[in-house]
Each structure stands twice: as structure tokens, then as C-alpha cells.
Image (cartoon, rainbow, N blue to C red):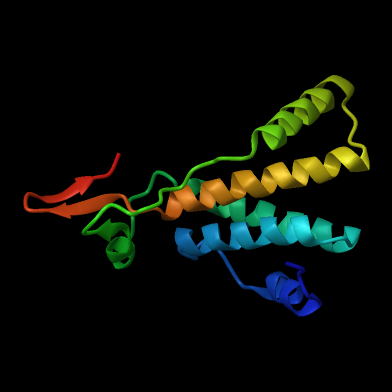
Length: 149
């Protein structure tokens, strides 16, 4: 799936602030990370990283706050979802991620080939992060809402 300039431009102009719902910030993070992997232009990559960094910074303080009342219906389900968020990279991918991170720590250098693998890892991690944040948290039972573990 190639990112068109129009889609990328829309990502650069998408408004968000400290008042943006955490679910929307999580969606934005996911869009920036996926676009980063698809992008070949270094200037756009830097801009996407900047937007992603800003969204992540805005998202971080919301992690320990209660879910806002207007969002509760999105997190309460009658049945457990068929799929819950999971980080499941292919084993060869995970091995490459680990090796590249180790080499970065040892060499403190970031050759272009390694940068691509780091972008893939970032994309996987951000996707997992966003899925985890947006997953249902309670299930309806005759006894009331019960936390999903």
C-alpha cells in the first residue's frame, strides 16, 4: 500500500492538542508510524517522526487517567472480541530487530539499512501500543461490568 502525497499531506495538517481524546491520539500515532514505513522522502520522514513524537508525548500523560465518560461505550462489550491486540512479528523479523538494536547499542551508528529495520520495529510497536490502548476493557455480565484481563 503506497502512501499518496495527498494522504501524507493530510497527516501533516491533522490537528491535535492536549485536549484530543487518547483514542484519536493513538489512531494518529498509528497513521504516522505506518506512513513512515511507506515513505521514501527523507524530509517527509523527519516530519512524520516529529508528528509521531508529539502525539506520543501528548498521549503519555493520559495513560493513568480514567477513561472519559463519553468514551466508555466504546470500551464496554457484551462478548469478548475474537481478536485482542497482540505483538506477533515473524520470528525472522524479531531476530532482525534484536540484532539491529544490539548493533546500534554497540556501534552507536545508524546506517541506512538499519534505519529501515528500526522503522519497521517502530511501526510494529506503535501499532501494538495503539491496539492495546483502544481494546475493550470491560465486559457486560449479569453482575455488571467486569474488567477484561
